[in-house]
Length: 631
Image (tube, rainbow, N blue to C red; front, side):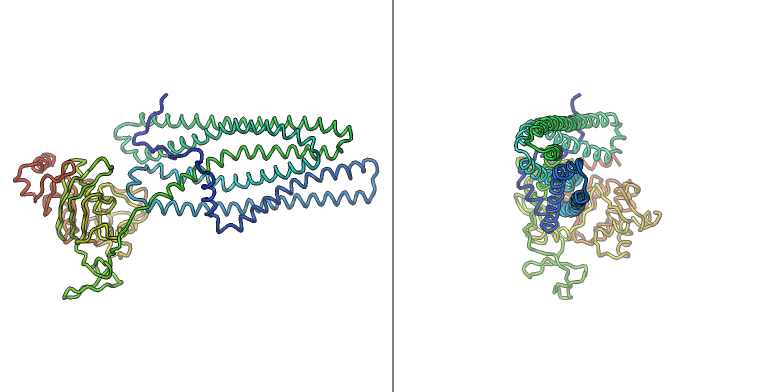
């Protein structure tokens, strides 16, 4: 069955997820997050060495115990020999206890290092996502961004918590054991080296294939997670259009891809251990036979052969562990590369220097900058203050989301302080794009936009956006109380100001009837409320901001006709004295505007007030006639 492409899709899951392209730089980047823990990491490294060497030294005592004590004791038992034997046993016990304590210490410390490192990476990643321009979110799905915090960071957690210490411990053990093997018998060591070549060949062939499929498994997992998230969010749409069967088929296709990748990856990974285990048994058997012959010929002692056999088993185990961990390390590093790629994304560019500051204005119009909120603001440019009035002018603006495709073609318009400007036109005409440019969600490549005669590129983005309030068609409510959601428009607003804003938007009556009134907890984007009620809270949020400029992007689209009639006066009060930009399809929302702009294919084809445009009998007349028929 061919893989179905998800509707709207969760993107490609972990985009770019594959083998790490630059292991050295990625390791350096991870190490940079551990700078504050460098001394702790040194302790971890030392305790890993202690743990590994304790095991090696403990095994080496087998030769002494057998040759110097057990063999003589089998012939003659003396109190002095028994006493020395018990002292050696006690020494070995202490060595292993030190090794066990060291293992506990480095594991415990490494957990702390890994959690602190991942904490810092999450902070940097989240802060970067907050600073990225809107264009990034327009080109990356939510599922793709969420996979950074789940799949990628989780695989990195496993690497830092387990794989790093496991690989270091195994490598030190291999070096230590190999050195002791050469010391005890160079003849048997040559035999081990030959078998080691066979084992490494198996690791390269089988482990390499396993690594490729584990990477593919991560990609498929990202797709499945992103798709599930998208489908859960879109359950209403799925049910309305009865697309459950199609969604089920698409999920089955993605899930089947994940199953195949996971099955193949784990098949190779699971057969590697038995193969390595059997090779180690073969090595052990051959070493035992050759060692026995050397012992019979008195070239080696019995204790040396026994100790060497134990070294042989100890030598193969860390090699198998490294072969197991290498897949996890590669996958974790690939995930880390993807996280760092986002952290290195270019943040939202802001070259603005002009700030918005609160001022007090005297009777003669003199403005003075103050620290407390007065309700009056000024643009501060190199010490010079310009009163924030809300005058917005577009000068021959050209814009396109893609370089070879323009959305706005030479748009020129002005909005005087307190004017209401409405935009109407068919879908894709460029109405919402204009409001996005006022907010500087995107910067214009041609023409310019001024606010109070100051080019908006010169105004700091946070200050520009604090001068605007916006009500979107798609509302978003945060987890918290109704009071907190309205106060989101201005965090220093008092409870009384929040309630006044709710009354202004006519949201107060339904809020009062909620179980806990303004303290009612909202969850899951306010799903316990109707779409109209959520929109009213969004309008109240804009009202409490008390900004000179207001943008309403289909703000009443989710409100029924009866509710619209109730809030129209509230909307008028909300827009009173503010420069307002209105995007709407309903005639009742735009007909009272001071100027109406009719857009078509990125150009203003008609402009004027309602009566003037009706008299022209052009595009607006046709649209308004259609609205009358719908109403």
